[in-house]
Amino acid sequence: MKTMKKLMLMFACTLFMTATSFAQSKTSTEKTATKKHAVVYVCPKCGTTSDKSGECMKCHVKMLKEGTYYCPMCGATSNKAGECKKCHKPMVKVAAGMKDMSMSDKKTM
Image (tube, rainbow, N blue to C red; front, top):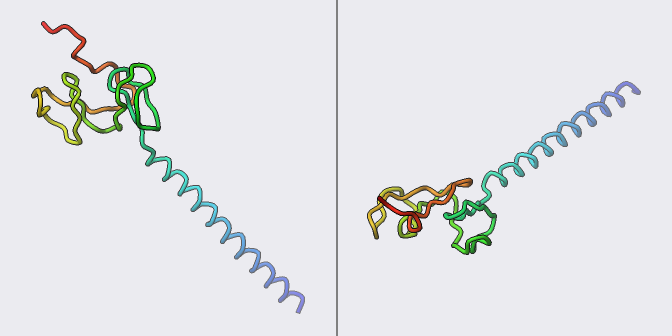
């Protein structure tokens, strides 16, 4: 009778530990999934990044969502790659760490 109680107690403890270990692994997976979908905003002029949209604190240019396309000549934005509809120059994909993409300030030869 005592051995039966011990076996039942061991089984209950094993079941409890298994259930808690699966519960912990799900919460850590959910946290990493949330971090993967964080939105990053990038300044197309200086490359400053932020987690909030708005205006760049350094050069006062509108921050763009990472992954959008930006025309360095006229400043137009698009969700698709290709040619700018306004000035027909190639669009550049906005990415974190990008340097000054503005061509309006540069001299062309």
